[in-house]
Image 1 (tube, rainbow, N blue to C red):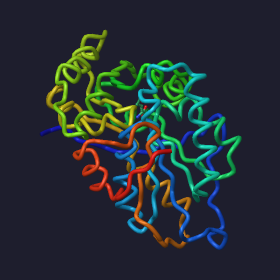
Image 2: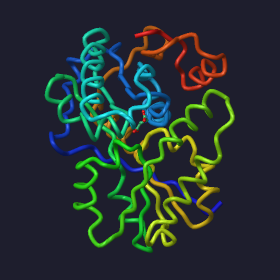
Image 3: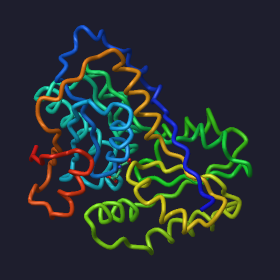
Image 4: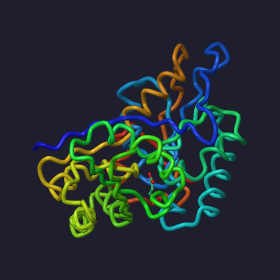
Length: 290
Ligand code: DGL
């Protein structure tokens, strides 16, 4: 396979500044990191967090009752994310929250940072490293419908991809495909080939050599996407860099896991065995309703 993945973080720098590290002396060693997404996408970030911070207690929160976010309005997404994170931080006192979702971050990160006291790390499309990597100057971007229309993405494009062509395509079918894959169900290959073909069909699309996976669900399908795009296309996403940013913000802090890590689902918890087993593979031993 000639496809190469390069992960990179883009901590959202606007509309509010990155959080500062907290004084390690004031952190309860049992306080978890809270990772939040609409579904299984944030597990791509959790995987990297596990590698860099293996002792960190984690709560993985998935707003499965609100999935998919991509087809919702900005107001709906902002209300859900702010409401849930407010209640979750009150109940679980995390030392840090990671919004492991591009859709939620590009819409609600600034607002959530203003209302919650805990440090919040966001996930926004990795346009900057993609612009540095492309040789042809044509970058594809796959995201949700809500993400690709955000002014936040316009700003990233303006700031980091001047002189390049950025072709955006909303691929909601890939969210369903990633959810299916992690449930052990067949993946809809038409959604994957359809996304690749749609980007290729845009003006200049045949010259795409770099694709930004601007939804945390999409790295779960990287192998399938790689086949669909063919050789010579590299994929970029933020998981590794986000984990690095979390490690930096928690540097010097003590970790003491006092109970098995858990997944919180806002939707049904009578999940298929394959789904429960998959969560266990990410170290999430228990599943609870929130
Ligand atoms: N994982 C989310 C993201 O990064 C979106 C999936 C959804 O549509 O809920 O944008």
